[in-house]
Length: 101
Image 1 (cartoon, rainbow, N blue to C red):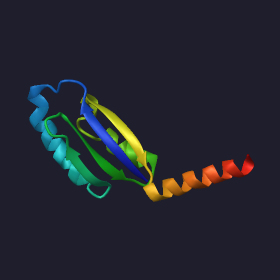
Image 2: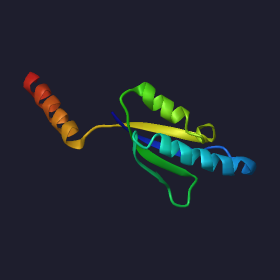
Image 3: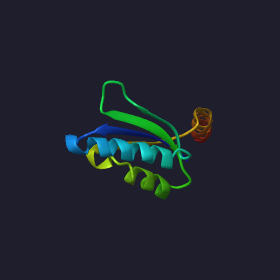
């Protein structure tokens, strides 16, 4: 299962903890490099995102929960579906609805 995760700084990070949070975040990215396919920061913002590929929602929850900046951030999570599969499903649903009318 793939999820788009967006993290935006919601609370000011205390300046005295920033260096240790940067180190912890770098360690977090290494720990979850197999589950996180892509990861980036947004230019000019205290925000970023990534695409996680996980086996379960519990695994996703662990990854997000261990994100060092989680307590200072607003996290958005979006499940991702392959576009072609999604379009085919929509087409089939519309055909089924049309057949009933």
